[in-house]
Amino acid sequence: MPQILVCFKWVLDEQDIKIRPEDLSLDTSRAKGKISDFDRNALEAAAQLVEAQGGRVDALTFGGPAVKNALKDVLSRGADQVLWIADPLAERADARVTAQVLAAAIRKHGPYDLILCGEGSSDAFNQQLPVRLAALLGLPCVSFAQALTVAGDRLRATRKLGDCVEEVETALPAVASVLSEMNKPRIPTLKQVLGAAKKPNQEVKLAELGLTPGQLEPRAVRVGAKGFVMNRKNILFKEPDAAANVARLAASLAAEGMC
Amino acid sequence: MAGIFVYSEDLALAGQLLTPALDLKRSLGQPVVALTADAASAAALAALGPDRVLVLEAGPASPEALAPALADLLQREGAQVVLVGGTLRGKHVAAHLAAVLDAGLASDAKALAPAEGGLGVQRILYGGLAVSEEVLAYPAVVTVQARTFLPPPPSAAEVAIAPQAVLADARVQVTRVEQAAREGVDIAASQRLVAVGRGFRTREDLDLAAGLAGALQADLACTRGIAEDEHWLPIERYIGISGQTVKPELYVAAGLSGQVQHLVGCREAKVIVAINSDERAPIFEAADYGIVGDLYQVLPLLTAALAR
Image 1 (cartoon, rainbow over the protein chains, first blue to last red):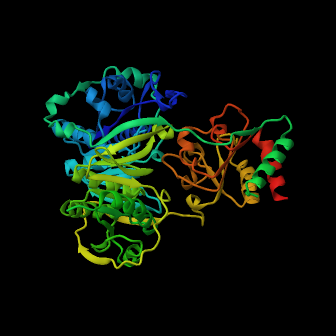
Image 2 (cartoon, chains in turn orange, yellow):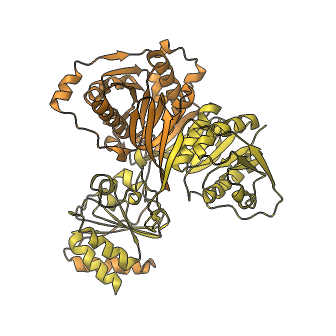
Image 3 (cartoon, one colour):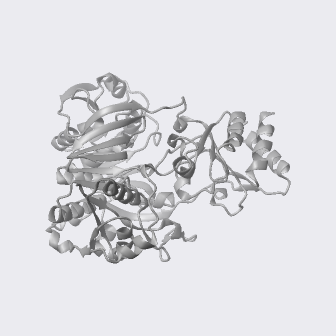
């Protein structure tokens, strides 16, 4: 029965982030955290695999001090245990640092048959962590899976790529990333939420992972972030008479050379 | 030992990557090397002005299977900048290269220029809400999406095309490949699109949008909800952060609110038109022209007006 690990990221909910009009800086002061949307698909995929054929799911995350807020949520979504690394250093970590930290934690607390990740994080959406993790651990990686099955010591997956759909197979242990279209993440039931409180969580100290300062130094450094401003004409037709609005829009489109 | 390397399994995209690569050559003073696994495409790449073209010879192998060999090659060559076409396969390849080169990687970079401490790039953050400026230490790996750059003008310079034998990684075996049903439409290349969202109450109601698309000679696109939750249109037609990114001349958004994750896929359209009953819907901020009204009333009128 497969031992599965799901890596997830605790991110700010972008819907709560405001852009300050005076300098386009980001106001995150009211932003709540959430499990990154795409990682919920990975958690759901793991839960469904285990419900179908047995096994066990651990979840693993590396984040800032706020990552503790994730524990109950992740345990109510099907993980049997959550391992968490909370360190302020995570705030400026790039995917290289995160992959090094997660790989070190996996070496220490694994092994796992299957390591699942979402296709990208909903904040940075850099789409590189699973492949990096696999490379560091020396494991094969199946990215962008639309469907997954575990049969004995083999992973079979359907990969959805731009121009084709591929069936692939690899030996376990392996890493896979899942597409968001794979499943609909569950909304935890009251029973699952209550059950989460009884499940174990384990803190992993960054200092105990034996990483060098160089490994924890990001090589992609964010030097600024500004709200994206749409520079559009914003001409609104909102008369009660729909036909009049349509006529004015059609005239505008004609003036733009669109019809 | 240095160089600016470009790689994409998509020949058109590989050509586009040469534009930022040749720009960087001017500031970094390093040669540009185009990598391809397709010998037939080597001459076309050579004509766009790289200093060298290396043809990777590994027999039939997926780009992902070539990633470890590519990483070895780039390490030996001392690559300083690696630009990879930002297809899904390309993103897998780039992440593997970055891991082996122990390098920073920026996905879907929009602008590249040398900066204090490395290579400066711009990319989106929080699903398109913000634009992030990042500096990648050298060696730097960057993926760039199709149509971010135009290909460079043809160059008449003599370019060496050299074969390079490499070994493919056989651990992941491809057992079956099915070409995606395209229905003859690649919406990423469409010049006009009519996009639909949850303002449509039933699948049959999409006929209203199809009618408008017919009058505009446009193709239909949609939000993630319409494709992934309702399954009313194929996944290939959804616009957004994990879906398609499009740059049409005209984008008509009907019955969609304009979440930032959707807008990021269409905001480079030349003209955006929105039709929504809620005047406060964010789509109107993203639109050049908008009609506040019931799409069930507006779309037939607009279709008739445009068909005239």
